[in-house]
Amino acid sequence: MATDAQLAFADQAGSFYAREYGFPPVTGRVLGYLTVCDPPQQTINELAGTLLASRSAITGAVRELEGFRAVRRTRAAGDRLDRVSLDPAAGLQPRGFTPAPYLEQAALAREALALLSDASPERRAVLEEAIAFYDFLAKRLPEVLAEWQDQRKARRAAN
Image 1: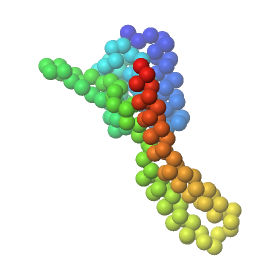
Image 2: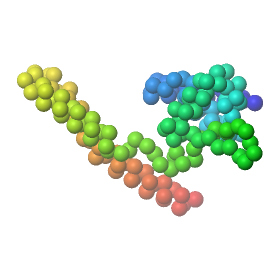
Image 3: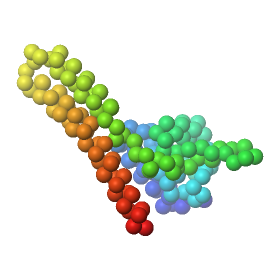
Image 4: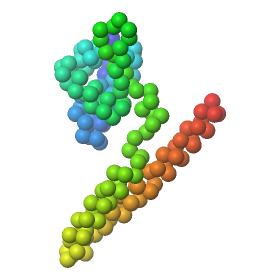
């Protein structure tokens, strides 16, 4: 049985992920609840009952979270129900640090800038700033990820 604190945390996570990433609130609630629930594996029915959401909403949320590799479904031999839990590999392989999407955004901004060659400097400034930002992210994010991996390795070695 979920505690009031666990449900409050799930609601807080739902609000955060909706606000910051545009997830449907139920998706964030599922992610938040799976972070703190006991047992850490839950069926769709258990999640629906606990979070007071429909099975279809929970199934959609789980599907979306699977796409982000944040959760996984497992089924024990002889069991008829999938169990959903956080994917333990999710924290080991952080996503969003590859430069490709930022390089593509920079290329798109450069294309737009070329189309606005006769535009005012004020109008072009937004695109020039975007190009600089995307190029910065494309360069720095892989460096940040490598730094994190070194730090994680050192932390594990110390334990």
